[in-house]
Length: 365
Image (cartoon, rainbow, N blue to C red; front, side, top):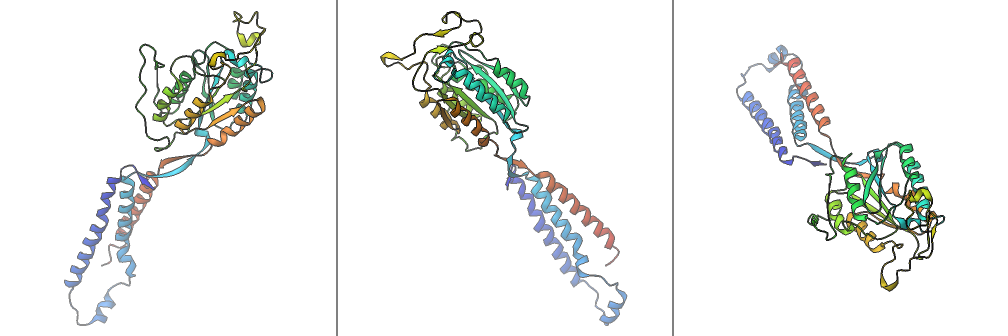
């Protein structure tokens, strides 16, 4: 048990002080007692009374003072927070590289299927929010328990150009802040060495040293950050807010051609010849990173530095398994819960007993 106001425990000194005053009064009373020549006569005129009755009012009063003294320090006990109080923000990469066909039929379709299964398997009462990102990040669905709303949003995903992983992390933190008063919103942050860039907050304490909030971010991407604030620049904001980020690097290490459906392109056929396949793969020649390869090193660093876990999935089956495992990581959260009320109630009850006992037996010497 811990206390929010430990200094308030100093009021407990009143318990031994009251007991000391009582014992001194009892001693003086015995010294001042009238001497009788006949003890038998004295006993005959006094009513029969159990010795414990004489001390019961004081004992209950002292217990009441003890309980109220503990209550004044606002006692707290660590408990497991049920999943119903957990909000999960699913940040999905919808960059054009998600049309890669190394995962059949393409990465985006496989990710949509796994995300729908994740929604269906969520424990009762858990809230899920959806952030989508390509060249910028946006909140598609605020944290909710409405499974149909989430499924409809997942089914309607379309692709765009660019990959803003860092911005997706910050947008996810803002989504959590909307439902958890313990998490402060981040707002607009410019990073990546761009003009007007805002430096990240100073390094925070080790992740988890002050406990984590029950809400998490699950970020899935198949590429590397190309826009806005870098992922590692966004990490301090998550650590400061005690939010864990679980990352999923999706796709194989064998870049393949892109093939998007008309719906996935959302009318953007500029480079895809009317919505068909894009001939040729991305080889990443000249030492450059292929846009179809997940930046596993950065994703691993993000997860480690925020207290989360990094996952890797190279096909649809592995991705479904990762999503199936994720709720187990957040179903049990340890958080302090204030238990002042029970101490106040017991203290008040004991005070009432002390008062009743005093009135009941006050007629007896």
